[in-house]
Image 1 (cartoon, rainbow, N blue to C red):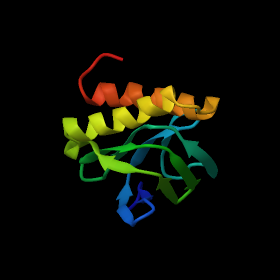
Image 2 (tube, rainbow, N blue to C red; image 1 turned 30 degrees about the horizontal axis):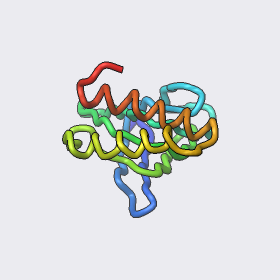
Image 3 (spheres, one colour; image 1 turned 135 degrees about the vertical axis):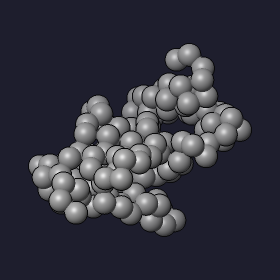
Image 4 (cartoon, rainbow, N blue to C red; image 1 turned 60 degrees about the vertical axis):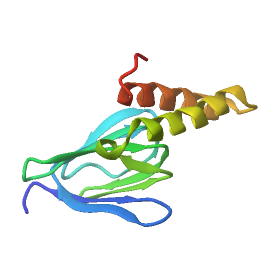
Length: 133
């Protein structure tokens, strides 16, 4: 289909999503960026956040990723996520479990990069949980 590109979301266990999409909002390590058809090649780290896809049929998906990498090419985007969860299926218990893990990193003996990622995860998870940041 014209105006779309191939999107694949891969976790360590399996391919979570494979679809033709119009655009994807990516929580990049240096900030959010949008991938559109014909995007310049890029390799980026991911920070914890919500990845948003928009499909040609008008549907969209919101997926919480907890770090990883992505590779952008003019005709494709591949996201290799450490962990990924469909936001619509995340209940309070799941969110609270991830919050507890991120808070443990902040309280532990983590380096600055890990502490930053944990703080970012807490911010996004609180917003998913309806709590103020």
